[in-house]
Image (cartoon, rainbow, N blue to C red; front, top):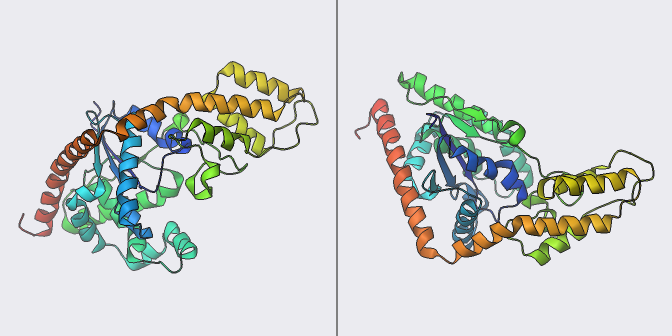
Length: 332
């Protein structure tokens, strides 16, 4: 196995959709055979939006179920709850002591949140980058799979790690690098005709891994289209290109070629295309639905996975925090 350590997490804010799967989860499954991986459910991060206790627990549990249903293997990876690792919060405290107000206020995601939720600009939002850095550095991760929206946070993690090393004159932390999936990273469009698939755009914009067949069919049939092509081989508008992108990820190449040919000859019927896409989408998500249902009913197994992940993550984190306390000057 490669010596690199990989760390990544996901906030428990609802069910996983195809964008999550093709954007990261499918690649996490591949990575666990090559690297030492730590995948966590970021339930501390979710407190910046003040979830209810019921939502916090149920969402975290659902994310665990869907992680497992998507193929993450607790025997290959360490899967754990962020809140099960108090060492992360201790490191978060130490990093906050060396993080400066000006650099935190300049973070793009913080400025976005200030505009989006002006009545809830809390300290957790401001120090989100230091908590993310603690999540990564607590395991001395060397690779971090991140999207474009998280690249600035990763750069700050490198800044905090380097600053700590320089301040205490010990190379405690590696400077983690972004892991790029390259051609394996697929951007899944939403059903509203623009942008990517995501929960923030509304339930109807995304196909979730646990959506029932009837729900999937309704969502697909409501997807935005135009009045149809008027010229041979004309360029597809964005909403039609989006449908073909979805077709490419769940349908056979022959099916894609069939509808592409009809479109190019101005003979496509969007109703037929949507019906085919819906059925192929139902078939593609069927194994996820079955596995999610199976796992959701096995509370004892889920608890065992969480306990196992907590123990493995704690072992890694304890070594790091002992070293950190030593170089700062605290007794272990």
